[in-house]
Length: 384
Image (cartoon, rainbow, N blue to C red):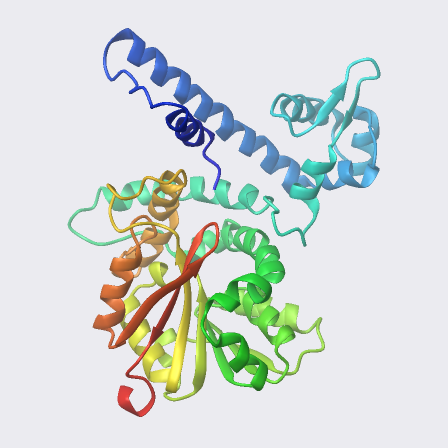
């Protein structure tokens, strides 16, 4: 997760020691103002790019395969030319577009086009252009919830679906899952590839729009898969995607995670959802009961530590911020535990896993943003 300021500090430290920033006086005020103005510019850049994404302007530019004038962009996209002129100015300043002043033309460079318009590119960033505006939509509800200490409230997940967060998450995560889950991430779970190749029954917990479920079903035709999610809209989208495939070994169902049938799965998988749940301990108990003897829960959760003091990575602020404006509040909106993503590290996860009855817990690997965990033991008949 990008954090240029933190990355710059890390580089400086490697080069011979980090000089502490001033904390008081005119110098400190000036330093904070400059840092804050950088944040403002970045937030406005995301907003302008969000308009370009929502209106299809980036795709118009990518499909042109060359420079366009304001008039050409307006005609191709059926846009008002005054808006095109202004947004192109912003996008040039923020280095999304390049401008040829001699011809007054604009072009979307190849790298930007790949990251912003290719829905299959594993390093696509376009999903952020829906997710960040959706987080801003949550500010009012989170503020109200924070100011009601006598009751536990929050912003429900259904609001974030309406604001485009779930779609943005799918756009951000699915390309990487399709490119890397089977090839690079799954082999880090001991024995998982072999079991799936031979043929087992798998439940995808909190499957969302089905990206992981369908990826696994495509790769392992001898295994059967069921994607489970409480959100009806996500299940409808997953089912619609499935209908465009020839797969016969996967289904999707809308149900509470606690309703998983006992002894129904050899493996359960998830991607970034335990920390969002109303009752994560209850959900883990349900997973344990659903697993057959010798079964395992293959879980991916945020790459964070268990306390603020330990969270020194460049992406820590992003994790806490997204947790405040989404992960934590969607749990608290249901009167839930409100774990959130900010400090959901290995020790915290192990604690709730053992409370849920699992007897074996280990971190088996990671990627750039997630820890990989395997939860086993006390499953099948022993879990009843």
